[in-house]
Amino acid sequence: MERAARLDTYIKFTEYQRIRSDAFRICDSLMRLKYGDRETTVADFQRLELADTTGLAQPLSIAASTPVMFTPDMPWHEAVEKIDSEYRLSAVRVASLDSLNDDPHIKLGNRPDDFRNFRYGNNLIGDDPYHGTMVAGVIAACAATAGELPRPVKILSVRAIPEGDEYDRDVAAAIRYAVDNGAEVVNMSFGKYLSPHRDEVLAAMKYARSKDVLLVMASGNDGVNVDVRPIFPTCRDTKGRRLENQIVVGASTPDGRVASFSNYGAENVDLLAPGENVRSTAPEGGYDTAQGTSIAAPIVSGVAAVLRSFYPDLSAREIREILIRTVTHFPADEMPVPGKSETSRMIQGRQVCLGGGILNAQAAMKEASKISKFGER
Image 1 (spheres, rainbow, N blue to C red):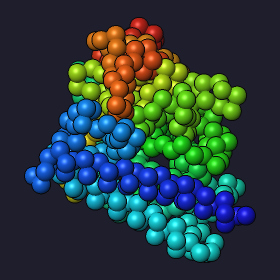
Image 2: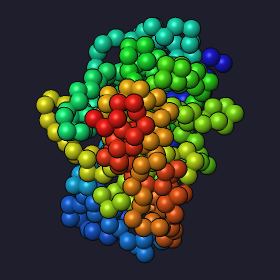
Image 3: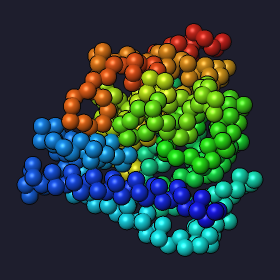
């Protein structure tokens, strides 16, 4: 029973990756039919006309909303190969776990179902720190350019999810570690739809609330309504009450709409922030451009960190309320629903997120100055 419970998350995630890989293969055939043998990019896929895709709504929707930060100029064949290799890696991993001792976490002394001890881990970054480096760069950029004078913001890097293995115990431990080491804002650019130990993660989030720490969560990149299909760590407790120290962020486009890949929800997504073609730091001293709610969330985290630096008397709850209250409302009353379907459906701004708009850092700073005892800084 213990082994079955431990492998359950692996198996379900691998099945999801298989479905995604199949969808990309179908879309690849469509791309070849549409464009022939010429070299194509992700942007070419994004320009496919719905009239050319009759009967392929599901694989198109899966491919269009894949939670991978593809850039528009990425060669299409590389995108297909990347998705397929991720599935094959997971399949090999599941097949190799023939006993409890084969689980790599157990080999490291970490039992994913044992929440009695959170003191584990090491200071090794590991392979491919791309995602975290991009996220950290966005936060640093927001902090460095806010207000008339730069405000230094310290970044505590906690790697809890290498290679997509998102154990609830690692998430809970990372939140507690960040809180205990002085974090006032915790960026959470991750998420999943299965949480075997939801209560333990919720306890860690409530612990953050007790220490007045703001949690900033990415809404996810599957183009789904998270009011209907919750993403974890969820922003509500087991009784459905909202955690007032957690803010959930979706991604917006340069022209002020919700991004086609962004998850949305009138009740469980609070606001949007830029999430397309965002340039940030990359490993080995480089820079790159990426997209996703994983990039939108740290923009909000960076602004929240600046607000807490300028106005330390404001609570996490007050910071969240200010950020939501001061959004720039969408320029249009309606916009296309995220994801791809054969019929063009529209959605109202108030159905996209609670605040009905996009982060406005300047307006948030002005609003905070009116509430804080420190006034305008």
